[in-house]
Image 1 (cartoon, rainbow, N blue to C red):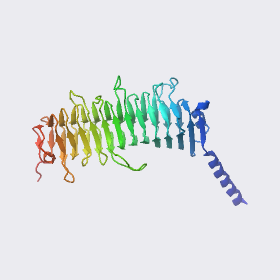
Image 2: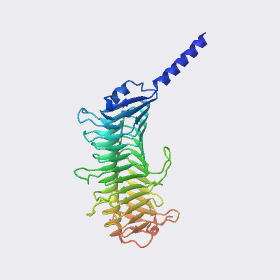
Image 3: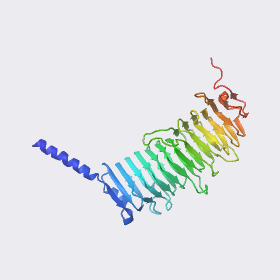
Image 4: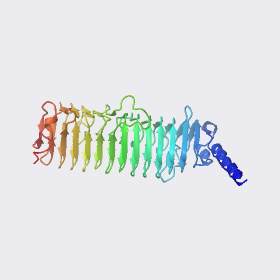
Length: 390
């Protein structure tokens, strides 16, 4: 008898679990609220919420596990013009949650002053899919040791940064477009901004930003093809396109690292015509870069090509840095740039105003691994990568 009662109890619990996990539809065009629907769900079990219409509210997803927010055709999350409060907020704020998928929505932040999406408080496995995001003070913010995957997301014309990653957070980016069509007016725009955080990316374009990627101290930018979520079809390049002429740096890393593995970094028309330290890649304050075999291309730079300054270092394998109106490789203030070789692939450094430039405290090594005869203004050139070793 006791065993039968136990079996009935287990069956009842299973049926209750399945019933609680059924799909919910929210129709904001009929005055329904996504926040109110979420408040009625058990956040500890799988739930799917389909959304119709335009929901103008600050939506909070707190403490959910295995939640799917799915847009029906045309569904939009719009930021209210008032009511955000004085603390951090976003049109969609995901906190302390795991395994949340947000798919298919348009985000309209034009009426408000907050980010469109915030992911924080140790959230993990947050997947943003097929979103169109426009307006607002910022787009996607990931912070406080959170983890997210972003794929097939178009972010355009938002304030400051399309994607911000802070506080030891980790983000995967693939098949995305971050662009600005406002001609850079009255705003400093950054494609991806990192502070003490990590981003892995491929197959993404960043267009017409003042800085394509900006990494602060202890930040890591890895360009590598990964197929955890989708097959790596089509171009896997990370393209920083500056055809509008607003760019100062394609990638600027201060005290962090840029690692270009098997996803090519293609930077065009970076920097400003007055030169200075505007560049395709700017390494500062002990930053480092490794660009693997043929995976770095900087062409037609309006500023410098690669600048390593203030005790920074770059190692290039078969890089292409051509047709810049200032320096190609620039090493200053106790910095170094090494031209290495892999699979017999030489670097192409040519057609710049001066191809190799360094000050008396810096050096460029491995010049024998450059094809042709680059022009140079550098007293510390070394044809090999090291001096003769014992």
